[in-house]
Every structure is written in structure tokens, then in C-alpha cells.
Image (cartoon, rainbow, N blue to C red; front, side):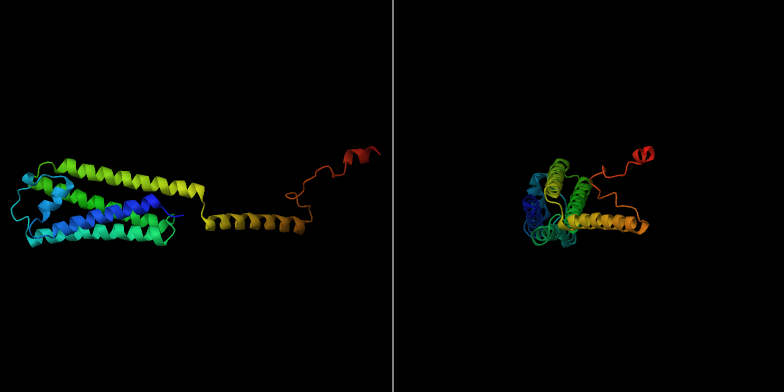
Length: 196
């Protein structure tokens, strides 16, 4: 079964970070416009050389890498079984990378004295945390409803092996197989025979 919520959220964050990267490389607006999308008023961003290529390029590349990671997580949720550990690890890496980029934006903006940056980044981080928790809850509910076929087969194999091993040991020792005996009333009554 596919994760509908996980697919939607990973696609949403991929689009958000791709748009931020695209807005960031726009020569007329640059980083100030990207910060404006995050919720920071353009009047609060007064940094000399903010549209310089040496500043814009790493910022845009970091946002684009996060967008690619979320896109990868989206494709993983569509192609593979979304309950696989690989899909969860890709989602985890994407969210960690996005949180790291937003934290770097916060640190760099605080060093430059941008007003209102803390609240804007905190809102984005809270939204990402809520998305990640919702995706984990959906994954766990699906795992509880529909156990992995491989796990069911492995459990059945272990149970069958244990039953065969127990039966083999009881036959080698010459004792009856106590695991499969249903009726215990067939034991000979030794006390009754001694009385005779």
C-alpha cells in the first residue's frame, strides 16, 4: 500500500525548495525575494552585496539539493514500497538537510541583522517537523495494518523449522512427540496396574 500523505508532503516540500532556489537565482530579486517568500519583509533585508554571485550561488545550490532530496523521496514513495527502510532513510535525510539549510539561513541572517528572520524560520521548521511526524504516523499505521509479506514468511519459516526440529528430536530419542499430542487420557495408569 502506498503512502498518500507521505507522497503529497514530499512533493510539496520539493516544490517549495525548488521555487526558493529558482527565485534566488533571479537577478532582479535574488536572496531578498527568496527571504520574502519565507515571510520576511523586503524592508528588513538591507545587506550590501546580497545579489553577488558568490553569495547567491551557494544559497541556491543548497536549496536545490534539498529540493532534489525531497523529489527523490517522492519517487521512492511511488516506485518502491513506502514501508521499506530505504524510503524512510531518504525522507529522513531530506528533512535533516532542509532543517540544516534553514538553520544556516537563520544563523547567517542573524549575523547580518535581518529582523523577523527567527520567527519565519521557526514557522518553517515547525511545519517541517509536523510533516515528518505525520509521515511517521502514517507509516506506522500502515505497518500495523499490513505487515510486510517477507516478515510473515520469515515468521512462518521459523515456526515450521521449530516444529520440525522438535519432532525430529522426539523421534530420535524414542519419546512420543509431546507438542502434537492432543489427548493425554491415553497414558497407561501405572498405579492401577500396580494394584493388580
